[in-house]
Image (cartoon, rainbow, N blue to C red; front, side, top):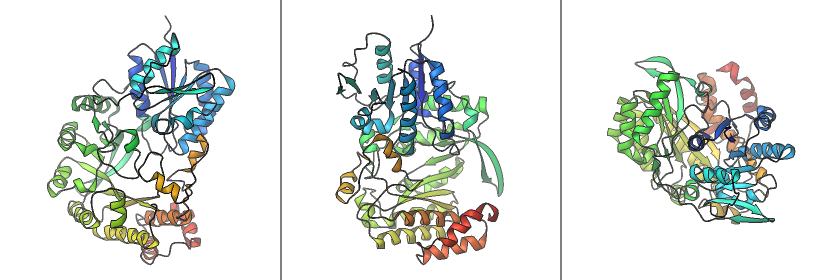
Length: 465
């Protein structure tokens, strides 16, 4: 008997950032247990038309998109429209964007269903109903259309037990996602095969800018240590990976679990971690466990802003942690945000000054900077509306709320400022000493708007470094 087919799609907006399509892999495992045939698509922009042809040829029961807010909403909308124009294949949207804005998504004529929250059980039940009786009102956590009306069913509680949720290790070619990275060991540079991985969901903190408040209800839910180790052992043996980066929202929410995983994987690693978790003994332990990279959200150089966004630490406390990381020479990427609602010019300059202070204190530091993004469902979203932020009216227009392309329209922040600051801090990483000194001088003296020389150096940068 032929298995019913399902196409799962996640638009790849940055092929250079080699992150596997983990949401699809979890869904695929769940569906395959009930004898569905799954094909995963993870296309970059240039392959969207070709991918649509492949989906149409596949003739699936439906096309399921996992969507995050930003440029993926546009790409997912374009592909959905193309499929709709040429077939009667139902379109299902899930993921963060569809979960936070389900009504707005379902209003679109190219979306037939939305899955809200965790998708493993919900999508399985929806798949079975699409295949059989097509009675949807008893399925928790979905939205659908009936006689021109939008129908939303009872909320499905988040599952606190993730033991049944596993990734489909055979669902993709993992070689496409292996990144060759350089790490320093004993004074020498070594190239290693690195791969990203998610071992948990959610975060217990309440940062005012974060989607987790609405999407995960501040719940931290972890896959079992044995399940994580089993996956990584498989990837080690089959794909010869030597380093793993844990992309969890908060890998260290359960410190004992995190340490146990790092102790047992026997690989180099990189992790995202809150700076207030850093202590002398933990930093030493991370070095001993071959942690070669940290991503830390510093967020702001203003104590008022840090309090407003509920970070629960101060600049003074943050700087104490920076000195510990510097002492142990741990390479760290510090992430900061510019243009919070109510942020003053003085406070923005305080952020620049604090970042430069880190730069001088921690030689292994690098920085990523982006404009504040007013995501629906976050604590600060209503304040942004009061201050004049105009949210997109159509689902595809949410592509403008994008950190990297700097396209979000904040009435209180000039786009050019955020973009120029990001470029200048990137040049601090250059090996070319003159370029580094030029960037530092510009930032120290707040020469931000002038950018003729900046545009020239950006064009020449590949030849200068």
